[in-house]
Image (cartoon, rainbow, N blue to C red):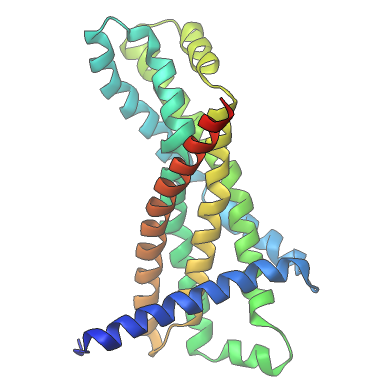
Length: 261
């Protein structure tokens, strides 16, 4: 690894942030410009949304299963075992569902987007698109951003539901609780603010996943090794940004909801 001065390192990182912000801004601005490439957007929605269903379903189910299993020990000490549905519903809908779904989709799709666009970049396919008069930002980036942000909402809802199903398996099979009581407790515990908090985050996470993947793909250099590095960096950066953004958005939403009460 080549050694560089701290000043040059800081300049490179600031430049990277600037380039990413410009790419993210252009991807949003292109939504309102023609052509819109609806067919590409639908294709990406199928690849990202339907293709991510198995991992999202498994993640949601086993997260709810394990969370109910661990939470049961604590609730049993206070004689509140019947509140297991309340605990799983709030945890999945407010926090675990959106964050874990975002991380799973980031691992699957941020890497895929970066490798796909990176391969096009190093083989000069993107330069060929520019030569033919096609804007790569409109053709390649914007459809992926729209599709990921849109489909992550539905993937999160499915993950939340599967988490509740996993919790119900623990409650009914292992803890011998009444299933109807579990679902009634889970449903009654959710209020408007919980649902809003759980559904505001997925589009933001989806935007981060797609934009980060596109940025690293379009800026990859150095042949196949560069594509591999871009893929790894895309997953790591998207995951870190999701966790950071989740902390900030959660705090802002809590302040907002507290202001309405």
